[in-house]
Length: 238
Image (cartoon, rainbow, N blue to C red; front, side):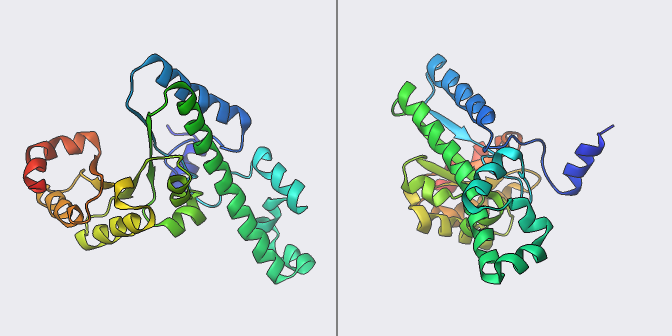
């Protein structure tokens, strides 16, 4: 039976346990994990999945809050638990500025982790590609999930992003991949398409739509679902 804690995850549509990118021990754990891979195995690349928060309301851990409090003089937890008192003390405008600052700090923790992983790779196995699965809408990716993925590409942290355009509406999927190509350039985009619990014809339709955007590649999620696409992938590209 799932514990009460895991029932809470499901109720809030959180996929499972996350570790905080603000926690130094968590960062070190991931850095060491990547270091072991690139030093022990001749890999061509490392792919980061779930390199984000599950939602905007999480990670009010001590490690995440400490730095913000030191810089801005207020516990960020009060911004969401005691908004009226904060407004009364600082004013509406300042309250909004503090919320924006907290959003930027949270995203900074994630970006800092991605940057550090890039450094580890460059130190141990230069030339190894780093990619990341990202939420397709850049604005909500930043505000809700702490993913500033356009900046990751601009700063050279990752070479490729995989926008998770997992809908089944071909027009909407096209729009999402087109947006990503505009943000960072098609050469830095692998289109992430849904290939589970959908008919093959649906996958083919979406592949045909996004192919005209000339992304660097197309990826299918999940592996079990994408096995059925192998037979027609060459035909779609033709």
